[in-house]
Image (cartoon, rainbow, N blue to C red; front, side, top):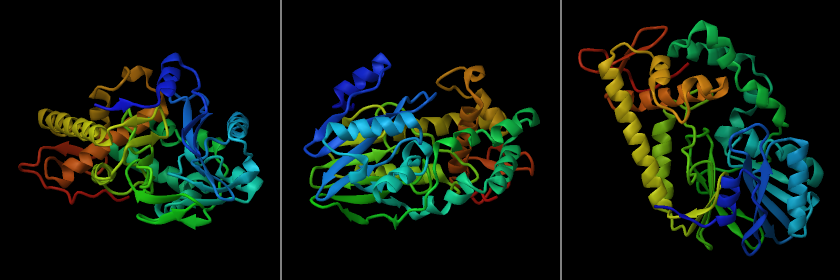
Length: 358
């Protein structure tokens, strides 16, 4: 059972409003930035007062509203955007990376990413044609009907407007220590939600700035898609175990609210995925030859399928495929066929190598 420590954040979540700027620890502030037309409503950017300036963990979407809100939030702690010296990006999704370039232009701050996320930046946000082709090919292999294929393969393109692309000045790998002038954060590579997702661990104050890796209420989307690693859910589950072993008093996530009992929340997430794996395995056994898309449509989600918009339908399909890849690697299901793939119980069928490559 997790213990909510961000009481004001939780109340704001329940009330459907923006939470306040808060000083989480001396010199460590939580600044919520708005997310337009998004059910998450806001992303929590963390500002650390350091010798010589301010370091940010994450940066928000590139909108005028988010930019103004960031400036106002920094004013609360007596600072300005021009005093930001560094931006540690947990991952390259627009709500975490979108404003990084604009912050650097205003302040000269360095921007840091994990190499695996940095490697996919150009194709993700600039030269996207090859990515769209590969995404369409993957969706066809999943059995997505032609009527929905074009819309789903391009479903993420609308949020490119919330990103100003910039290459990182620093690459942070697993275990790298970031000295911030009076503070020290250690990068913890936690792939799954993105190939290069990072958490940042403050051992001195027993804090984990968790990005989207561990959230207090919802499970992060772990999808197989055209820029993912072959078995992202398996890596995510391993990364959950990695952070579970850290000495952490409080978790500072990028969404929702702060909480305690990291180990308990990790156990909840592990149980959720174990149950989901069992449900999908049983569905394959009951309907041999089913496609990933048909599994996705048949699975229970947080809302009725007709109410799920195209981008979230694609994410749901990617989640289903991520679970199938774990089952395939474990020999609990098998895959055959060219296009689309058909999923069957392993007995009497040729088993795959557990990896997806396009």
